[in-house]
Image 1: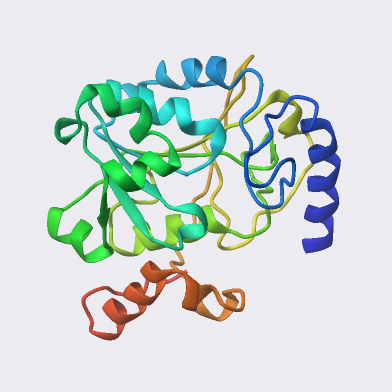
Image 2: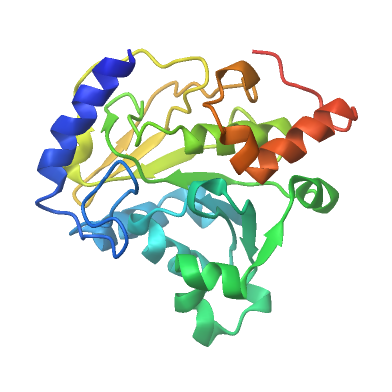
Length: 254
């Protein structure tokens, strides 16, 4: 399964390079980041017309380059924006438009600005606030017509989903959407693994694909499957492990 996914990523990444914008740190190394691309603004416009976005009060948006415009639009629309830092290494951050000068919304939507203008928020903070996320949005390396993502291979979105599900900030019915270029959408069949977060919507510059019966993982973190070093490098994972140990959070059952 892993080799199969890897070969598909390589195929898509060679096509994506034509449409992608280089990153200031990683150039075109798509194993390190999810790029912005020509047409991402049009894809964003499609997403913000969706009822699940329009009615959302809080949106989780991954720190992918192609989602910077969406983060800005969400702030402009008065929505709470929950994010993570790159590779979740400095945890979750919350952007509250009511606490940010509107002239700073655009800067706040960038990865640098988010950490200067937003505020860090722990899993315990979210639980104390009773934070509920109405929509999850991610970029991805590739995705098929069934909403199964191929990602960069690190599984960060699946970890974010599992952590938020474990503290009941989301449920198995919370919609998930992916913004991608058309060349990243494949007809390639794939069977999702137990921890794969299947997307309900695939949004491209030219179309919106709605997935029927997009099953979401309910297993929480599968601790034994964490890659080496993840627990040490991702603070919210360590916090969740303590919350479960102290019986403040129940480990979900698959």
